[in-house]
Image 1 (tube, rainbow, N blue to C red):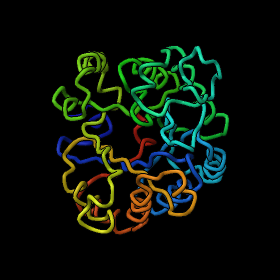
Image 2: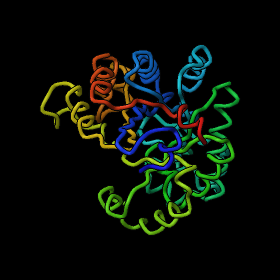
Image 3: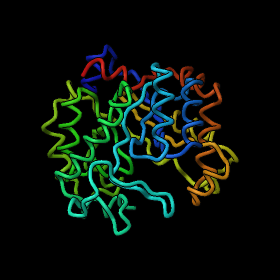
Image 4: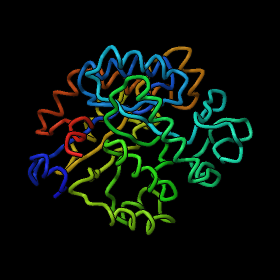
Length: 297
């Protein structure tokens, strides 16, 4: 059984689910959709890109609604061709943080290849401090595009979680699961780091449902409601993290995300339908956010 859940009072058969919004602060469309999802209750928490262009709007909303469970979406990447954000900590090319245009790298692989470890830690710290300076009571830290949980940066990431006394998004995965997730080259390093962690004191995720930004044409239905219900049907005992990316359709979203804007909008529609929360609860699943986990860190 997940030792951290046991400390929280859950039993070995309990299914515990975090429904998490990624990418708050990257656009106005994402902010509008994300906070509406949190208001409905099918989303338990989310994380903010403090380096994102619309962070200040998100921060103002969080100050007005301290009940929102939000963390920091740590990023070393900015993937859009025409919609970019830079590092917060430095403009020095020697840090490795910046691409040839002066922004964060567009791919996870480029960030891992180029970014200096100390520069990455300084940037993560600055992104956390940006949220704290905006009077946001952060509940956790996690990762944009998976870059900061690569073994190269994972030690720094976990040190910051300990320093700020917040839980970190941390999958407790096996070698087999790493192979499924295409992390074969780094599996030994990653597993070696996990072995040093006291899972009774550090919340680790038994399952992560991350591949949710799917093209709509790949779905049998016109919306994503049934897609998420199928994922929920598969939730097993332990701590599961389901993430999604809501944004409201409009000219802004269409200009930013030219690949899957309809999938983001479908996330917004799915998680503002209060029947989804009922479906989760009727399945006997306990819905929690990172703020509950933080109480036991």
